[in-house]
Length: 367
Image (cartoon, rainbow, N blue to C red; front, side):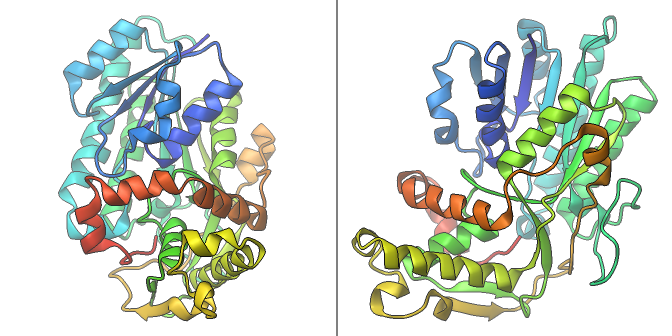
């Protein structure tokens, strides 16, 4: 039985991981820590909070007193560290919070773990969730990022994650803290905050709002279904070597414009197959005889926009026998179905305390 601290467990990937881990390891005791800033949505894990083996704590990873208390009270032996500011556009506008949360917060967790585990390191693990964006940009024909690729971050977000990765490695090499790192490609799936590309475009189509595509839409991303990401983290915790980094990708490279066009096609097909959707989403262009693609608008590219990311997954597939289960077409369909079936979730975000953000920012981003 593990006593696991999951930071950022009310965020997109963190919430999915909490569901996954409880399903696969019902005997473990889980402490979910989340500051519930704009993208931490307690509603996402509300059904789990009453379960005996899960405790939710509203708090900040930079609060060292709180972190020490959680380690001591719950005898934490495993940390899965998702908590981070993660939106590139926001980091360009306001980098300070990214530096604080992603670097200082990670340092606070590492320092506390070291002090707590120093006298009994056996069986402990600190797993840090990072991103492929630390590696920078790839040319159209460049080989995919491996774990040996040099870091070359090109946004404040990516730089702050690169710095936190380095701190994790330092705590392993200098202090012997048992750590592991995973650098993942773009995730998609249930519970993703609607500032990110896929949920943003889905909801904009349903509401009849423009679909802003940066530049010429030829930026390429590798997409990973979030439950596959959770499975990969589970494999690392179970069998991954300490001190190692594992790249996690979905082997699904696609241009942003092609992705948006595919979402448009899937939504048009859904409306064609289900007459009830027209009454639920009367502003969707398909209701008025127009293709959803008519909403696409090309907008000025963002500063320093990386052209292509791609992940080489040979290491994790060879060492841990991990391979994604969900292909991109199936995952996109599952994601659309989830957003159609969980309208209350995203409508709550838009009508509640986040409404001011949506009024000023909604429709202004691509990841």
